[in-house]
Image (cartoon, each protein chain N blue to C red):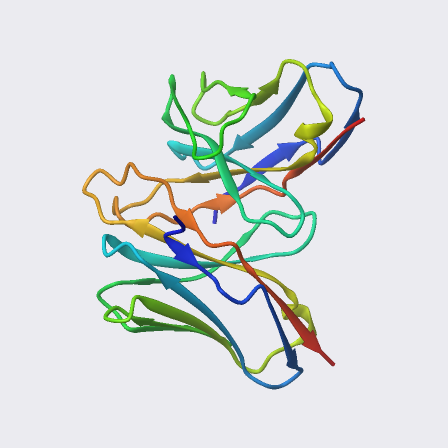
Length: 115
Length: 115
């Protein structure tokens, strides 16, 4: 059973508009969440993260929102640019003192920004 | 951000050959990971290591093996390559200051084609 779900496999947005990528999780033990961006034939690049003690984290054009009660997070990209076209992965880290549990990744959402 | 390297970037090889995919990082990270990703599909964790002489199997069963003799080096070996091993292999490392804040940094990946 998938613990991190990205239910939209793809999303198309016009350049300059807002892109909103969604992610849901089922495990209440997750307390740290990350977004990665991946171009074809390259490794994922870390974008932004958020700890469960916050509900928003912003870095330039990228903002991540966390709704713990709904077990939902979203990544907002404003304004969207053609170079943002990539696959975006949501990932979550379980709470644990030793930190000895790997990240859990979603299946990814392919974002296409149309000029 | 971690400096993490993978070689080769691309490999085309015949069935039955033994191959080793190299992964090195220069940040002194204790934790290292191998993921397998088919085009358009999710990341599957196949191996991880939390330090020298420590290796664990990931969520996806894999015929590959790994070793961790040095902190900076985490090679993956396939004793006898088969077409079903054709995929992209991604290496990552992490060393969270706070155990529960697990940010992984990825290498560029190795794209393997077994004929």
